[in-house]
Length: 568
Image 1 (spheres, rainbow, N blue to C red):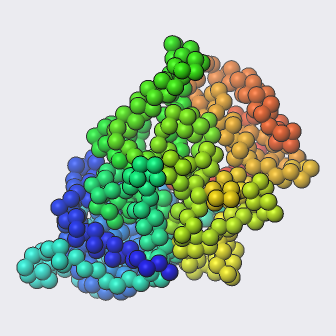
Image 2 (cartoon, rainbow, N blue to C red):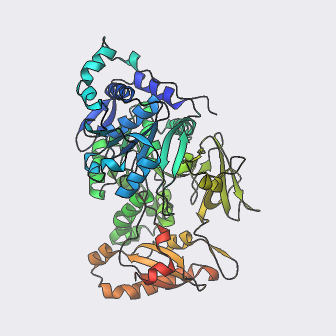
Image 3 (cartoon, rainbow, N blue to C red):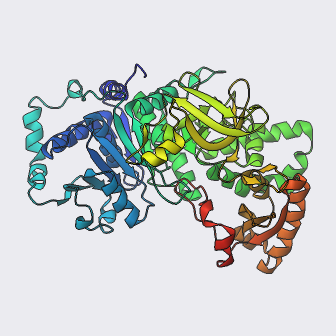
């Protein structure tokens, strides 16, 4: 168990930074200082007390990322209750299921989400509140929450007769072994599980990120008055930990975009906010590489200069500066996570000394498992496991060269799945090891390399392990390929479903009727790069983008050979 405690970290940060900006809604241009945020938290604590909320009670939260979403989250955990953030991409049925399964007592939501829910569907919820201004949307009969909230100014003044000051920022004792977060995963298995995360789990993630430093320059990545542009869903563990929880622990300023924006809006926001740290999924950098960098390198004088060694280095500096300027010009590090990174994109960004690192985590670890500073990051890896916080082992007789399942034990590992002992026993061993389901290898220094998911691994007819993600990585970088999915056809052969890049085809004047021939050429090139047992027998053009989870992982379980017969 860790000595530090997240609630005490926030108490100290909010007191020390009362005048600094904490949360900004980018589109509404609304900002809360740390002092104003703390005042709002104090009001919500009065509301919780009036509503009879006790330590350990659940508070559900759904809506776009905005300051009041963040304030609700912090208010809940500093009170000693359990926050239940729900991804806004879930269906209405899933939202209702999670609210009921978690036994949530109160619900905070964006106004439009209330249209999805009928009050008789969520019988345990006694009050529903708007994330627009915290007004009461609904209360169960027999409660007087609306009346109390209408007179909140009076109640607040009675509680703080001398005015609310930084000395009044005092939060309940919330021990490190208390559960404070129920995070329902979307996953790729078809149904959600409630991950029980403790104060200790979140504290470990925050203090590691808080202390993360470029070991060459000595620069801390998360700094007081540092600027974060948040566009990942905060209901997901990755965005929550590093776009939100960590910046607030150090006096950083979080600007919230609401959700993953279009590239145009994202670039405009970068120019305004000038972030010092950016957390993103690979898709963001891959799109920029494919749409902006590759055309530069393939055409005109630059394509010729790239072949001349000395000019090549100079051009790398030019491209690096252009990319850095596009992201606001002040970024200390790009932390990439949530999905595998395309190897060609990663190699190029490292070649031009772009400040990128790729981490590895999962909701069950809140989420971080491995990370390396950008100046120490090894190509193809996902950083070193966090040795002061975790133990990691590979279930393999040669973990450095032969992939095996990655096992985790330590400060970040969840308590289990809520009201789901069966699934908990499947992934947590009796001596505390978490079975990640990910296959990987590990260098002697603890650097991890992910090969693929154990559930997606395909066993060839001659007993070789095939990791479809590695084949897809190569295929996704080929001409006119937007994304791909390699599946076992069931007869010992591999088929690749490919979604063509129709935008690129239109831009280059390529007729759709020519795509099959293009894909046939891609198939030939692909198989030249693969071992005999990995070779793909056929590329099948898939008409629409694959269905994905909120963190942009393909829902692979939807694309079985049996299902595809009826869809193609």
